[in-house]
Amino acid sequence: MTTRRDFLKSAAMASAGLAIGGISTKANATRTNAASYSRIVGSNQKVNLAFIGVGNRGWEIMNDFAKTDLANVVALCDVDLGAKHTTNALNKYPNAKRFKDFRTMFDKMGNEIEAVAIATPDFAHFPAVMMSIKEGKHVYVEKPMARTFNEVELMMKAARKYPNVVTQMGNQGHSEANYFQFKAWKEAGIIKDVTAITAHMNNPRRWHGWDPKITKFPAAEPIPETLDWDVWLSAQSYHDFNKDFHYGQWRCWYDFGMGALGDWGAHIIDTAHEFLDLGLPEEISPIMLKDHNDFFFPMSSTIEFKFPKRKKMPPVTITWYDGVDNIPAVPEGYGVSELDPNIPTVGGGKIQPAKLNPGKEIYSKDLTFKGGSHGSTLSIIPEEKAKDMAKKLPEVPKSPSNHFANFLLACQGKEKARSPFEIAGPLSQVFCLGVAAQRFNKKIIFDRKTKTVTNDAFINAFLTGEPPRRGWEDFYIV
Image (tube, rainbow, N blue to C red; front, side, top):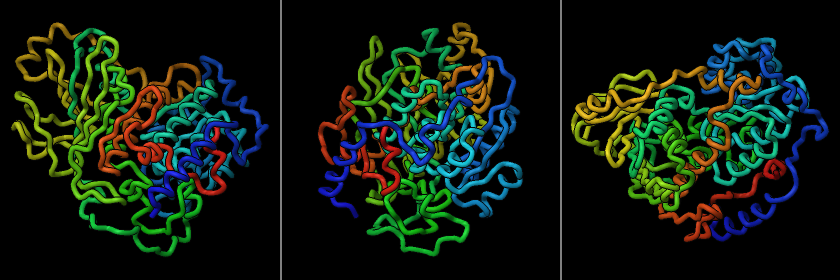
């Protein structure tokens, strides 16, 4: 375990090295990125697309991209090529070139790639994104953008430095009905004077049932023959291989994932965060953490985020609930959770339902709204109030493209990306701050202007994180 003193010292050194220079990678620094910049508005040419991470979630988004018929898949990159979970992708695109290391991919065929789709574990998003941007490749990356606050900050900085690169975070609801409804209702004054939001995701998680009295990481196990464990770790400090780090298990650990908040937050509070102009919170408080430990996420968490007044909008408090035994109360007139294609259905109707779909309740001065996750639309509650408001509701436009098509059309210059880093970055940083509150079980006072924690130097250093492993330092220089 890293001591508090060692962490502060190493994080300070890391911070000092992040403010100078330009993005430097193993790729040829003089390689032209004209291929990505030469898109002509109105062009019907397909986008030459490479995938970094092709198993599990990578396989899913690969099929979503395929449905758009807007991409030509030219490369597949995964640290575990040949494993059972990556064979579907290899069989789907047998002519695509294959790599285990994205750095080698760019070295060998960078000029043939125009865009990348990244679906690696959360902690490994950052280096792949940074190299892609430097190479002039448009970037689609799954949510959340990165594991640490500073990594997200550097990704936003890189996107500003290379403005011709299209960026998109994979919170797919940002291109579905939820997005367009919230936007229309906000502009029409239906959603206004919001003061509180309850957000919840109470489904079982992978670490539920683990021993919270853990005192060390699980023991080393043999590395599978197909897996390049060194590249899997990327910039993260060295950990011995264990099956509970690999596949989707990485999401459980502070060192690798972002827990329930990072996994689902971008599908639940994304529209409220953007259209209410919330930005970054000024206070983050862990109200309840069940079975807190230093290694993996709590069994249940209640976290409060306080956002200040913005222009004419009042302060907002978002309260996040996760854990199967941590169901929030819902308002009178909530009704039932309707069947939704994006989230599991539940029974309900009681003030304290035994089970509740992932979603949110939004409280404003005059109206209360309930909504689900992903593309689920909002409803006004109770039903009598909804009937009274029906004639006042504006027409909501239909989405011209789903999230995957939107990204590729943006690469072609035909649309604007709906979840670029300038929008998705601050949202991802909210989750980073929430995870910091979970990990240290302490209230955080945050200065929105300087983007620093003012009440705890250790937590402030945690926002930067430990220095990257040797050989990965240049990815952290913009």
